[in-house]
Length: 139
Image (cartoon, rainbow, N blue to C red):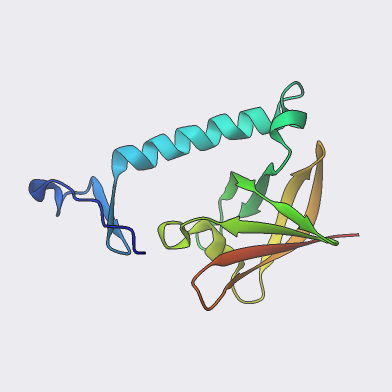
């Protein structure tokens, strides 16, 4: 069942405060709130007191943006599958970060059990449109 597109005010359709992502309108306010939530989640995940509890299934990744060259740190949900770390990307059409790992992939740093580990990540979109970023840890 398809999710209906959010309606934005008619006067805002051509406004810089609204972005169209796959027929869904996302306001600049929502994007700012998302950044604030990400910062808060990152702080919890990396905190000595709460990180062990919050870090069960959540972690942070850090990578260098392919086009911007900037270092980016994001909280993500993950699960282990053997030696690999799998990161499912919810609503991938509304996000861009995972595209840094398309094709041959790219290096990243991931926080696991309070320790930073390096690895190589590759993003793949399946036939149903779902995106998974698979991280193979170094050493």
